Length: 337
Image (cartoon, rainbow, N blue to C red):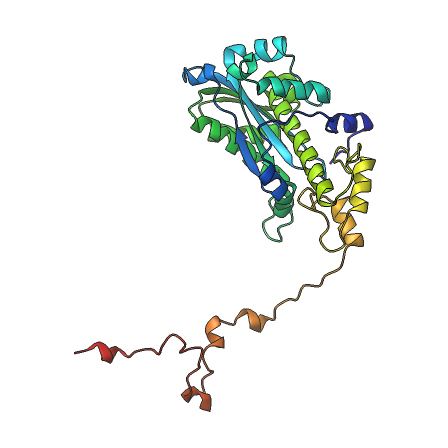
């Protein structure tokens, strides 16, 4: 995975005054539980479900070792797509916008009475670091990041359809091969025109807006996790914190090294599966544990083998105490009149 440069790291670092959107569910977030948040259907669409809508999806936080990966979705009437998002509010790829501008746009989207609030619906899927790692570290049937991301995208879109929104066009920033991904989505959502493209967050305003939803939610989530960590450790909040969460960020790197428990590693905020940083630190400096492997004989044992005596010896005549704990078997003849 390509590491961000210094300018990108600055852009990826949460601002001090990040807007805490309704998509921050603190209980689930701090417990390491993935969750989904949906805004209410905007009044303009709720009053007329025949209105044709355009929908965009993008993510934030795919590369960092700390914090969740967040998928954002935004939809609005097709006729307002470019006029409202680009011409009026100047949405763009969240990585191009400054942290303060992203936060301000998200706040406007969530403020009752604004044009964005009246016309746009949005949603986020917060994929916790714990769940990402759990899927990627499965010994059998690894659930890789692309598959997790694709499932999150599909589920978010299905949720919008289930609310009765008339989605006619869908634009998505690609995961892997655009053609393969698009064909899969076309089979699942045959009534919509679907476009999966690289750099879609720079080409389609609804994807740009979705990227802002995702990025501001991740910024706030990362900040909430850091504050919870500092409170638990009774530590003074640092102005640098753990930085952007990217392994190439010196602040993140230092935090990982100085806060690793040799047995348990880190908390729910860390992706243990990230090779090159978290995984390497654990393998190099963590406590080594040799897990016992059961013998083949043990694998064939049944629970009843521990309750019944083995045949062919004198103990056959003695009934096991455990085997008769709930009573003795009754012969069929006992029920005949």
